[in-house]
Image (tube, rainbow, N blue to C red; front, side, top):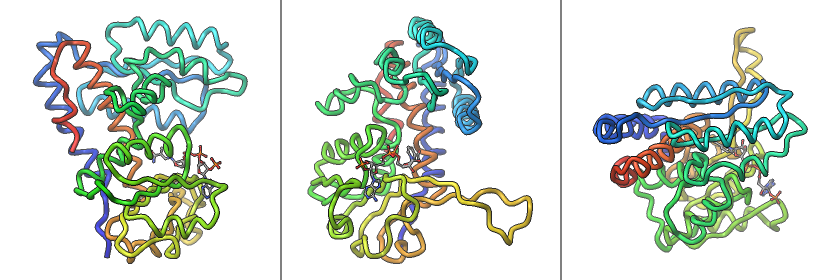
Length: 302
Ligand code: NAP
């Protein structure tokens, strides 16, 4: 039976380290770190995600400095809010919660975020730093996957890694991070022929296709490490009564793959909790740099 890569437990251990780091350095810095989440409109799922991020800030001793603009805000309004947060010295990390209300183009707005404060690590300049192997904020979800693999001491040097998905959010930065760790990386996508033949080559298989249950036993080599980034809401179990909550599932058919894999992330409780934690890590690294404190990454990440 596979080892479960428990993202909830690792996220909580990293949060403890973030908390201690902040306590140790706050007097030298003269202020606590600040993370600003800019929300536009009233998308209910975004409301839940923003509240999660605010709670995470409070847990580790960061200030949550977000702003909430009405759904009818113009692009100029959002830009003005981003520029205000860019200039605000109390803000070390800044992110624009997506999706934006219809009619707002996210690209120029994301590009307006000060790269040094880019908590999501998705600014073109920071993706460029990743490509060049230079320091800078890293994309949170793939960085969370790397932390899970490091914690489990999954050997990556010389390993065959396959990433299913090539989005800017997950697949592409994931492939770059695995390659930077000296894995030999293949990226598969919706046009790849014979997906199962590609994924069966993998010692480490990371699936970020956004297709529920895409990956089954036929896609996995026995002994592989399988990381499921996908997250989907399914209707509640009909036998569970009217109070039942929606169930979550991933891109991997967990019951089929778990007996084959050497290690696997569950959904929920695998990659998801790590994403929020890595957001805090990016904000902490920015705070430490801006306040003349040492680099926290070697201490807080596995
Ligand atoms: P996305 O932008 O829709 O990209 C999906 C990628 O998967 C695309 O590159 C697509 O190929 C590829 N793909 C789709 N169907 C495929 C198939 N049948 N075979 C092979 N490749 C296929 O999605 P995303 O933003 O990367 O997110 C992926 C999943 O991760 C979603 O379920 C999302 O909710 C989840 N997610 C979770 C977290 C977390 O914190 N746990 C964070 C971010 C995302 P093409 O490029 O050819 O279209």
